[in-house]
Every structure is written in structure tokens, then in C-alpha cells.
Image (cartoon, rainbow, N blue to C red; front, side):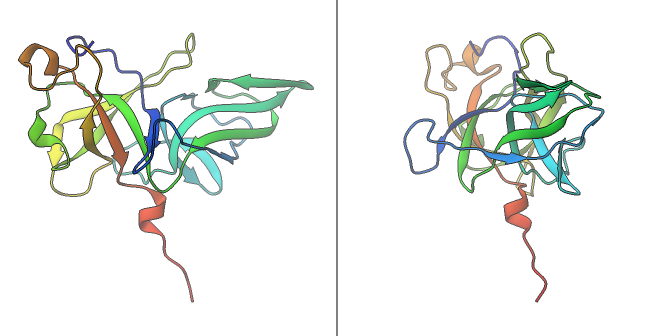
Length: 191
């Protein structure tokens, strides 16, 4: 599993302090005609009330996109990804955006047990697949920092072939992470 690189985005795992995949999602708007694909597993941001895919590692995340529904030519559609430039109405993006969700994601290079709960990392902004609807995002291993970055690994996904203590298996480890650079962490209010 982790001996080959196959980045496929962020998959909801659980709520920290809770059992497996007890995540939820919220509905947000996507602007009709938005001119970028958004794939399941992409990190998204809020731009003037609409969901957009992040375009830089310094963007502030709203959460992780897990699909959408909309009406096109009078017909309801449900999709694993938002097709670039789609003209539609009633567009709703489904985004995992709670305060404590965790995600499973593959790193684009080797990580060690010393990275877990010790460093933050940026993400790769890889292109997804219009066939599968899956993201091409991953954890960018070369960006480990004690400063702010998009994600923090909090564990190693416990599946066969993904042992971070075995050299061959840690080449592209699959990690459990939490989003660090989120809109909830940067909330400000005017009084």
C-alpha cells in the first residue's frame, strides 16, 4: 500500500476523541459557472460565500469536499466532483467542516514516527480524476515545519503494509491528519 505513490485526497476518518467515521458534513454554495473542478477529497475554502478549491498552501480551509448536488437543465444531479464551468442552479457542495474531524491521506514521500504530532505540513495540490471523482491532493512530506501549515499528522493509518517503522512501507505512508489552517481557527468578530 504505502510502497507506491497514489495520492487520492483526504478521506473522512473520525471525529477526534470518537469512533470511526462519525463525521458529518455541511452544505455550502458553489457559484454557477465556477471554473475549476472540485474533487472528492480536495480541501476547499470559502470565497465571498461560495466554495472554491484551495489554490495555494497558505489558503484558509473551510473543510474537505465530499460531493455536490445541483439542478442542470431541469434535471437533478449528484456528483462526486464539481465539473468546471457547469451552469446550474440549487448548487450545494457537501463539505466535512466540523471542529475536530480527522482525515486519511497519503504522503508524497517518506515520513517517520517523529513527524506524528510534532510537525505541520503543506499539501500537494494535485489534479483529480474526472473518471473517479477522486482528488489528487496529498501530504507534502518535504514541507515539515513547526510553524503553521495546512495539516498535522496525528497517527498512522493502521492497515497491513503501512507500517511507518518498516523502511519500505514508509516510502509513501498513509497518515491520519487534522486540518490546522481552518476558518474556525481564524475566526474574528466585530463588536
